[in-house]
Length: 459
Ligand code: EPZ
Image (cartoon, rainbow, N blue to C red; front, side, top):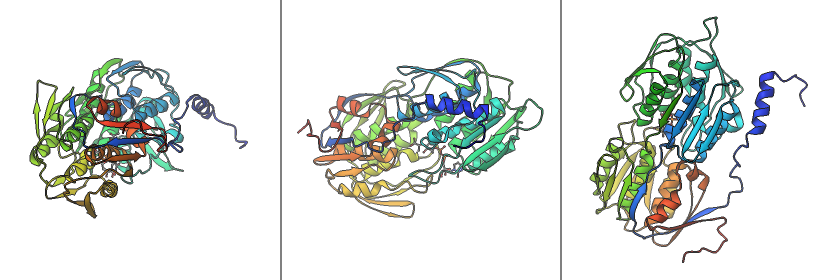
């Protein structure tokens, strides 16, 4: 046991960590998803709140020394983990169904615990709000994951331009605002080398409480960035231009309590649209924001599937014969990288050859191998997958490699002949709320069993 006396802060952190029951690691998680394919789906899908909005907005609640009520928060493992990280920083949190009440009045700890940050990349988003509120933040590097190295150099560079001293030591990013000016960041003009969603969100949050004006150029335009900006504006932040290439923030001394509802999840919507397309099913989905899915709907039309808007927040998918089409992932409003795996499953059953080029992440094509185990004909060269359409997929035991890859395997399993068994469900549970129940309601034949050895209830 080290004899170095623990600082008060470390004692508080240790104490808060002991209160936080970190999620059980899925080390022994043997549950698998069994899917019997070729069932056609029918009915209506209820879309949940957007995971990538909820995670950023939960971090932004650190900016406000008061109550924040968030509505339409999806019940996901990632949201639970973000909640644990906020709790370890001193935030009071209470969940009632899809409503989350947060109070960051007594935000004391400036150090996010490694055990939690290492399990959720989005937890790095707390660095901007903590620095803006406390003038100091210590956040472990989130590290890479299955889809890429996931560096944070754009976040760090931007915080330095806002006047923070930032250095990385023993895998932790130490950031602090020196000087007597109430340790406030200073507005700056920042050009992002790449329209990174996370870096845009980190710097926008940090700038809300900085002295003076911040201009962020070449920023991400994703709907989740706009949702975060709207949440901060509802707390009294002065932000213009979210959703365009340039965001301007005029710093204010403090922010106030707010009651805010998260936008619907466009990636969950897209995932169910592809599930309808691949099973030749007619479905309706709501609530949705159709303009958040323009590139996805356009691509489905190209492939031969109609998607029509019914009212302001409902979509209907009309199936059709699937034609091969090329896809290139790009920052919003381009085709979303988070829909690439799902479309690879769809194009594996489309007539002809399709090229899928992944330009956003360097290692996000790995699901091709598992789809090939189900009879797909896909080969990968560099960052491009060449998908040769086949008439049929066949059910097989497969392993999910990341969140959207697991969704792609579910989609393929719904269309395949016979039974598919999917391992690695901890990936799926990070990003999809009640996926099995929603699919069962549409008539899909699937069940989650503790262990593959268990007899299946559906024959
Ligand atoms: C967000 O990740 C989303 N996650 C991702 O969704 C999504 O795929 C991604 O944006 C792109 O749309 C959340 O919002 C929680 P980036 P983020 O920074 O912010 C490089 C899902 O499935 N980069 O836009 O981490 C980076 O390596 C997840 O829901 C740097 O080089 O993505 C990547 O190649 C997966 N330096 C590219 O930018 C940096 O400092 C895009 O990353 C930051 C990023």
